[in-house]
Length: 323
Image 1 (cartoon, one colour):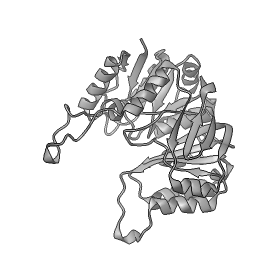
Image 2: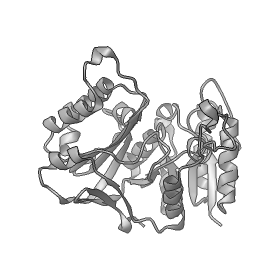
Image 3: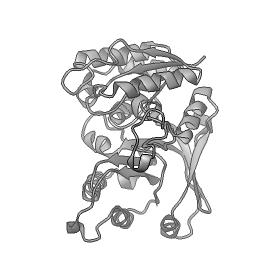
């Protein structure tokens, strides 16, 4: 029976119902779920003070679990980076613990990669992933239609692949604009290239610090939530001017959600930002990766060597050798 350890390294859990649903669903899937003693702690917006959250991360590293899964993102790991238990975390990875999370968790993932080279997994959090309300849990929407449908099936299948150790890659259908931008360049775009990235705001926040992985020849994947396209472009510009983007084999954009365009934008959309990015770099820029603050998300091995291929309209990220 796979052992899942739940802990809270970032924001306080406010949605206790989602927390309980997530636990029950993991148990119904046949997992042994262990809940950290401070998982529901709260100090201001955080899941406990800094010392409490550092101790929780240390307990997750010492748990011997198959998967250490964050309860939620939010904010809080950045202030812990100088004091993270890097060696215990890396030893836990070597012994088989898969650390899974997204959003604020990107800071821990990239810092651990920079300090130790350990591979972690970009994937769901407990509350937003496994704790998603279904028709029986949610309030009725307009017209009596349910407002939610529970955890996404693709996310669940990818998590099952991770736990069972059979996952070897993922793929998605590319938009026609991507194929046109490639100009007929298909096949292998990157071979044995380190996959890295995550939440764009967190990636940029680490620039100029000892916690930023100086990855060359990699495949950089990015996503974000609640950021207007001009803010996304501004962060991409910072990565560009810092020389990060031009050192990669490819850039893969996931889902950028929950922003609102205004009349002032006058046609300035996320698609325009992508077109601008392609004009700045010579490396391939792919879009549509099913990852981000959305229900349908794949799991990705941050720091692992992967192959990136394009076959007709399909993009493939393969990491079978990571296991």
